[in-house]
Length: 107
Image (cartoon, rainbow, N blue to C red; front, side):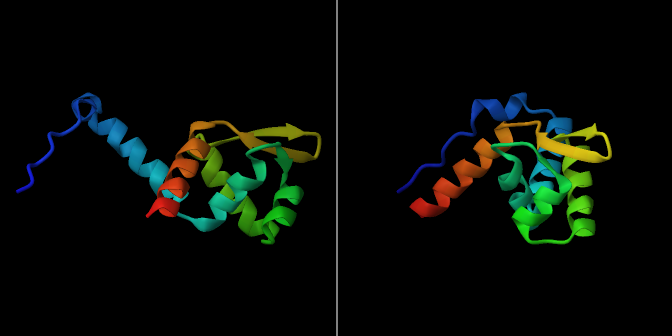
């Protein structure tokens, strides 16, 4: 007969607002093209054209997803003359992706 496991003690320390932020993060990462964009900028910051080339998508589609990734604080955006440079702002996001990927391989 199995016993129920007690809830982690950290659960009590997470506020409703933090749960909302976590849900937004997962919602943002739930789009495969955004994950491809993250993979393309995780090691080296890139310009929009480089991200388009790395992902095989179109510039308007990439720009739409980049706006979401910047607004949620996952990517940083920096203007460099006429071009815009994108880099990973929150490296914990890549660790989260790696953790999930590792769990899928073990399943």
